[in-house]
Length: 122
Image (cartoon, rainbow, N blue to C red; front, side, top):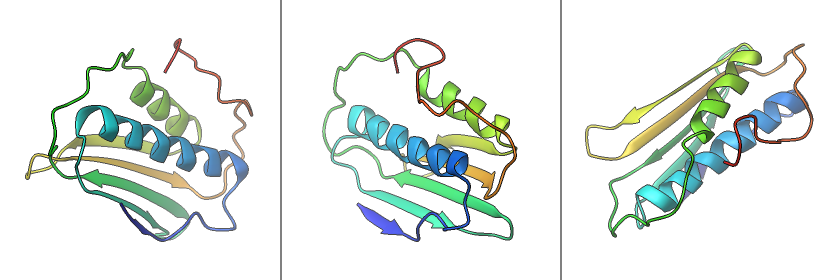
């Protein structure tokens, strides 16, 4: 895995949690759906925003048959929108996958401090 950048110090706690959960969910999905792939996690700060991008290459091993309720990305998208941001994801031309979060570094929106699932288990 390659890591570029970091969450800026001026990010609000809610933004820090959103960035953390996005990377966590993306890495979980890579483990499930693209084992053995190469992963790049990037943090960038364009203007007042924080961009978090997680990109993986195609799987090098068979996908794992692990249970999932498919709510992880839905919850991340809802969290991003509540904080004035957006989440987008999709396949890359080389057969991998890219997940991209763009969110204001400072937000006045408040979210629950616990990361309890909103749609059941994640």
